[in-house]
Image (cartoon, rainbow, N blue to C red; front, side, top):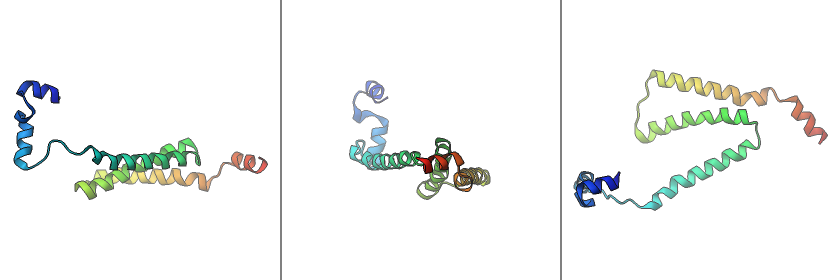
Length: 121
C-alpha cells in the first residue's frame, strides 16, 4: 500500500497521512524494537501453554484456551476503555462457566486407566 501511495503522490513527504502525522507531531517511523515486548510475552505465553499441554489431555487444553476470550475482554476494558453491554457479559459468563466445568472435570472425575498405568509402570 505504501508503494502504491508513493507512486500516486510522488514522495513519502507528499502523502496525506504523513502530512497529518507531521501536523500532530507524530513520527512515521516507529522503532522496530517496540515489537520485542509483545513478541516476548507471546513467546512466554506459548511456552507455558505447551508445557501445560504435556500435563493434561489435549481436549481439556483446547477448552481451557477459551479463557483467553475473558482475558482479552478484561484487557480491552482496562487499556482501550471499551464498554461491554449485557449480551457481552452474558456470553463471557457462559464461556467462563464452560471453562470451569471442563477444567474441573479431570480433578473431579480422574481417568481410572491413567491411574492404573502409572502405578504399574
